[in-house]
Image 1: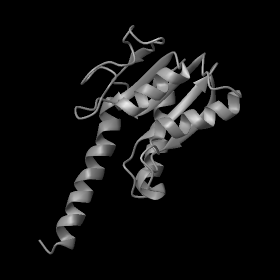
Image 2: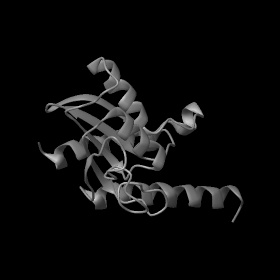
Image 3: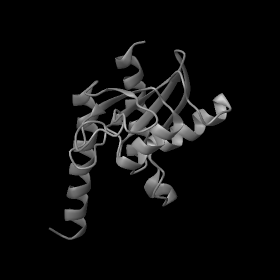
Length: 157
């Protein structure tokens, strides 16, 4: 399994989000070396809290597999999962998570805490962080820089 290849696909998903004015985060779920779900953030478009890339991908993968259990799957996501997404990963039994950029404000796969590898839960996932970290982080940096500049222009400053 080539983690960089699948992360590049997640980056392509993240770019779709950015084109819509969404925070550019993308996710891909791979089952037995076959892509079964791909998604990106849609919180602003749908105005729903749970419209994170990971949760949308998990829903799609559930449909494809025909089960809530996503065993033998790997989730690739461009940003370290937040607590909500980490919880969904645990609940869906995804055994492996690969992420790009670390999230110092909400990361729950090692930065603020590591929910995914906490053996107090009934499921743990192997975590690999920092895959194409620079490319994933750059998407977010550029997005928020542009957003700040746009807000400054709108205020006339």
